[in-house]
Image (tube, rainbow, N blue to C red):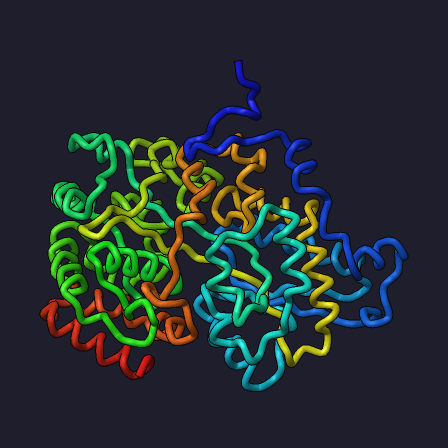
Length: 451
């Protein structure tokens, strides 16, 4: 009989006991300057009296922000500096970053989403001396970070985590129409959604200018029909293709037949609220819908008055199309800004946060919403405790692609994302613009960026 900490998980990974996990990953990251600080038990000269400002998003898991707020005074004490962490709306994060760089004033450390290090490369400090030891000590980073945080062979961001996206759906509502297994193809999902929408339970999909759910839906849809932004060189725009046009035609029918058409104006929060309110039957999302519904089970109920989380399945990847089945997840990292007068202190803070005892508490607070940036966290004992619908996220980060596919994830690909060109392409199709004309419009917009 297997011990509890050795049971197979849904993704085929094994969870291990806490002692084994700590032994495997070590208490690493006490090397270098931080080790000296801790050993000396006094702040180094560069830190004494200094203030360190960290800028991050408001997390979809409130407990994750609460944990970082708890850690700030501990870091202040350990480093001998005043550490403050500011949290802002995620959709304001890029504008704030750009303004800080242009004015050469602002936070010392900024959370950078996607492959923003490529976009802001000239304004970021080389943090290879921080990132390399962390990756080496913790089983290596996921490949996605080689595309997002590494520029020209240097780490310009210290990888922090990945948010996986899968379809959250109401189990009972699907069973009522005879669906016991989530559709594996787009055509199958359209037929299922058509039946649900007829019962007043549409699929909800955000298509507004918002950082997560709209792009993580639209890019995989494009790829699954064989569409792509560029050719493999990344130099030739390839968006106006047969695959793209076929995906647009499909989406027009899918949107009309199966979706809540109000989604055109939704951001990343609207679908969470609509799902919790019982207004939609399914939506692409991170684990936050399930995690919040469980943590607020006294408030979030289903139509029978039972805790809603008991009726949520959260383990369905987006369906596949003629070219396959793909995923775009949200990686994020911390960048140290060149204009900062506290670059050395900023690096010491990142080393401190990534120490096992500190990072682990943030990781556990997420409850599978944001997972670790390194593969060692797949073996954390938390996975043996999380509910079955969330175990799909345990190794999900291994599957992610990045913007610009089939070309490299360059700053130009980031600009396409930032201007929401791919999202707007599908929004225009949903609004009734002819698929061929939408593809031509997108081609024109991409040529302005790629040349």
